[in-house]
Image (spheres, rainbow, N blue to C red):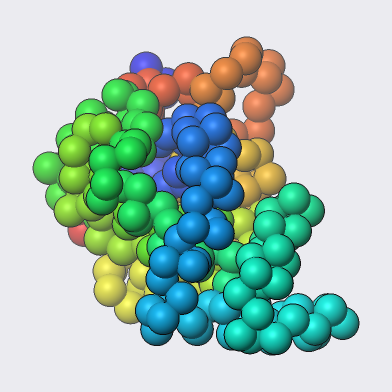
Length: 247
């Protein structure tokens, strides 16, 4: 166990990839699945309002890039989306379509989201203790809900009180965490010092710490740095907190 964090924790905010769950699941399962089924899914659902909206957004964004593709040119739009995948473009319509494809995969039982057993156990324990749990991930809120709703450990979605994605800002920017705090303070009687943020990325933890949050660094692989600037652990089971339901 680590030494208990110095200030009582009233609320926990957690990352997903590399923290509660293996990065490999997203990169080795979800992304390849969406790429493989993109064309088939779009052709099969081209009359769906949500899909049509994202195809129009793809056409609009392509035009902004100076590469005009007509909104009714389905194959041209698919080619544009696949190009964005190849170039790792974080385009909003692409992310939205990936989320729709992932939902189909989850509901078809093609896969289940990976969870580290220690993460599932501790999240359940903290929830039972009355600690509000929130998620902040680069994946869309929609994708986050699918992830936890269709996990290998069952439906974990009821454990969480809310979700944040990059609409609040980049995960390595302190202002993003201040934006999250402003939202949380509307719902909970908390101060920044009573919020614990969990992540596997040092730069995200740096930003959260600058915003005044407590931090724990999940180092799932490799050795914990000797000069770690954040409380660092190998698993959730090593996290020791002072629990306070209200302040």
